[in-house]
Length: 108
Image (tube, rainbow, N blue to C red; front, top):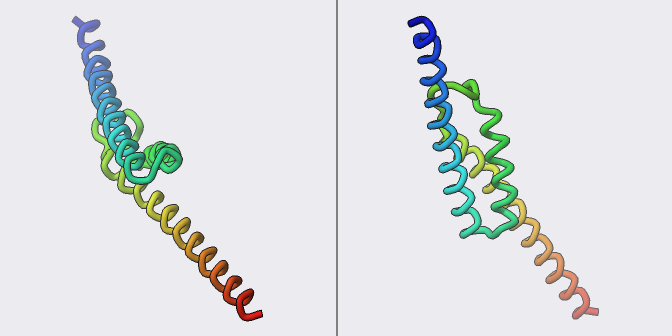
């Protein structure tokens, strides 16, 4: 009977771990698909790395019973937003610089 009692927590723990792994994979997959559809493959690849990094930063232990995968996605989404916003600002600055250079060229 002791052997069975000893195995039950491991089985329960493994079951929880498998469920959390499935939930994490599903959340990551959905996030990456959405990023790829909206921003392309490059941003999807970068965002996958962001998501994995954020999952490692999560406060709960890796084999805990519950983890908030949605919070990981929100944090990775914030990184994506920062990256997209910075890129857009850079493109706008380059465009303004080009227009300014063209205006100077026309005046001369």
